[in-house]
Image 1 (cartoon, rainbow over the protein chains, first blue to last red):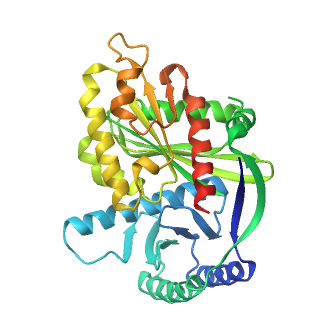
Image 2 (cartoon, rainbow over the protein chains, first blue to last red):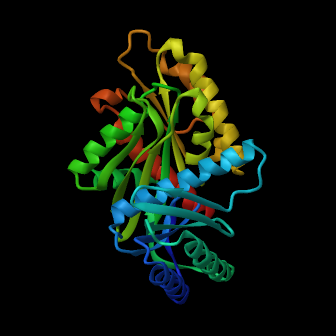
Image 3 (tube, rainbow over the protein chains, first blue to last red):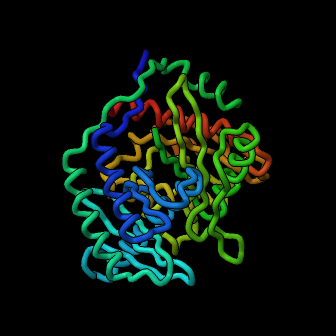
Length: 161
Length: 186
């Protein structure tokens, strides 16, 4: 039996809109990095000085993990649903904010940048992103046929098992 | 395509060993991206997560798999829930020792409950069961373990992860099951 293996991507016009919102946020806050991911830590887009793919994947995963852990704690303590998490380092400060329906935006700024204004710009960006996400469409970027019976052999060949 | 594969199992079942070995093997083959990230306690026990990313090209379709472990210690249940969020596939690492018979089962039950909270059914989810530590003198027979830990008869692999045996085979089967499940869903 053959199945279609499809790689989906966000529409180009939507991608550009997201990209502009993040670039705008970086420029307003002089952020090191702005990461937009889903709540499982899969990157949607990233802007800033450090955007090497492998490191940013880990940063996104840890942000989703930290936010998820804090959300679990909020539930246990019966406090209201977590919307924003902030922590301060020696050199950088980090803010992570939830974006509906199930995304997260994380921002790393240098110590000394006014966090009040960062939070304000972050809220503005979040509202814009929520509006964009309400109209999001995924389009198939690549499609291949895979035979279920031979898929394991194919993967073994590729991975070298 | 971005996938999330999580190794779960009881404390000291060999989840970290599996993922570390897998990273070493895939790094050598140039299909692991970047570093291996781990957050351990002073006793080298997983505190939060261990992870790395593998990038595979399947006939022009790029598949990035993020491979993570859950912490096995009982007290870290809330963190396991966080790591399992939106997971695409699972590897259930079972300690073959007869002494761990009960605790393996409790972990399976806990994981089923976590998935249920996410609206998923473990019995219909892409899972591979790995019977690890097959070299132990008190290892239970696979037939006996199949009844307890694999009642839905998904793929299983016998392994000695510390020697690298069965590690890659488990990964290939997990990836296959995820791709099939994703294709069906779509």
